[in-house]
Image (cartoon, rainbow, N blue to C red):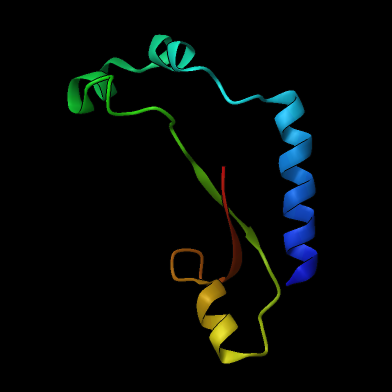
Length: 81
């Protein structure tokens, strides 16, 4: 929805002030040894994580299908961090 989109943009701008994107050299220094062994340091620039937040069940079937989490057994909003 427009509200979620607007809040996501505000969140991005706000969090960027407190958590700037790290430089490549900062990322390379912070790599876990297992990542370097598996992928090599030149191929991974940014490690991403995701989270889900519980949401009301959507009345539209297509939206419900998009928001339903089989893992959590209810509707969720998915956020890529």
